[in-house]
Image (cartoon, rainbow, N blue to C red):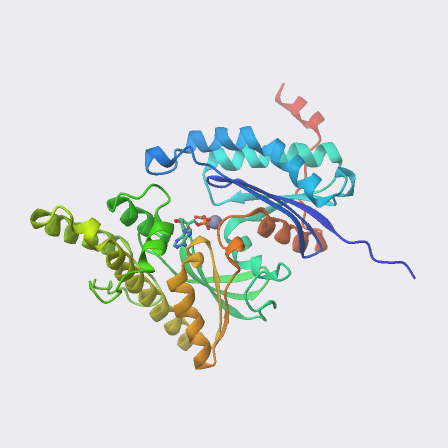
Length: 342
Ligand code: KG4
Ligand code: ZN
């Protein structure tokens, strides 16, 4: 009897402002490094050119570190998987070029990974969610990040259908912009989460957008908060300072309710009562609490562990693992083909 060799995959994520590298052995994470770029803080948002340069600066050393932590030799890697999009084109190119060269150098396959699919499928990393179990198919995924807000019906690993999307801002983008109004540095949503802990979430009420079906809209809420703040500051220049905790709590409550109402509608329409949260905003404590409470209604709820909510290389490596088993590789043309240019 031959023992089955484990599959070892290197995952590289560079679609935005995190240089993230991970190695998995089958579904188990054996190293996971995330370098958060801090250079953008002073600009209030991501500067794409700076993001690309930072990836370029840190990627090689991060890959070496990940290999060291995993305690493996490069030659043990079975494949390199890399984010192909969606994301910032310059940042993606840095990650992709590196991954391609690395795979050619080691003579192992290159696997392309969609960033959104990776967020969703991160639940299939060993012990990635609070249930410590894999969700069964089909399920509904609420994908909430800095750039996306979608409800996706997931029938199988690579059989997914978008049921609804934001018509304007993504929920993370909206939270980050509101946080900026309050004077928090980018990305500010995490501060809203922190400050809301001591606030009264009923102190201020904000109206919810009237968007039909399973689509979302968050730009109106952002403008509403902006106008409300400007109005209050006329009489009281300390209004934000004096009310920051309750402002944050009330905004988070409104956003959580919008998300819950939409997912309940999606469950009614599809008759699928199994929900999975994914994306950076699913790190939010209020959203996690609200979704967790759906369990009381006999709904299966899967909430990712915090380290797998925001961008990470493990989710890219996991999709790499799933595609490796299907031999879903990129065909790299031999360099001799370049001679056709001349
Ligand atoms: O998935 P992600 O890392 O990157 C994208 O694919 O966009 O998500 C980043 C987003 C940012 O908007 C960030 O502010 C938000 O996730 N985020 C949070 C929290 N932590 C990160 N939003 C709300 N509460 C948090 N605790
Ligand atoms: Zn992401």
